[in-house]
Image (cartoon, rainbow, N blue to C red):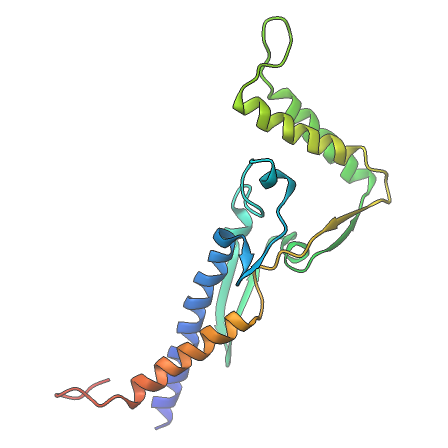
Length: 185
């Protein structure tokens, strides 16, 4: 009986790992955490993409493993925690240098007409929006604070609890089901 219970526990944990991995990934598509919408980023509000999806690196970094009697989920991206939990970042001189570099990079990609004026292309509108964002960031004073709103994509919620309960119920139903002719589970 011990082996049956151990195998059932392993199956439940693996199923929870798979189900929640898919749900946490879907949070990026839903732009929210189980019905709680994320505050839109300036970039997404301006039509430049989705919140928390620029390169897709954060989304692809989500990892999980079964460990002991539970399942662990994490991201190795250094900025994952501040986006998931929200918080404040204090602007440093080094950050300002980075912001200026990103501003000049965005400005350099803008296409111009022969007379030197910016051409009105979709690429330029997107780049000029990015350049404006980096310019505003670069103008922030050292010591000022940048507020990052909470945009939870990993964690416990009523939705997670329902998934865990459903997986356990399905496994118990499977265990209680009569054996088909010929035996075997």
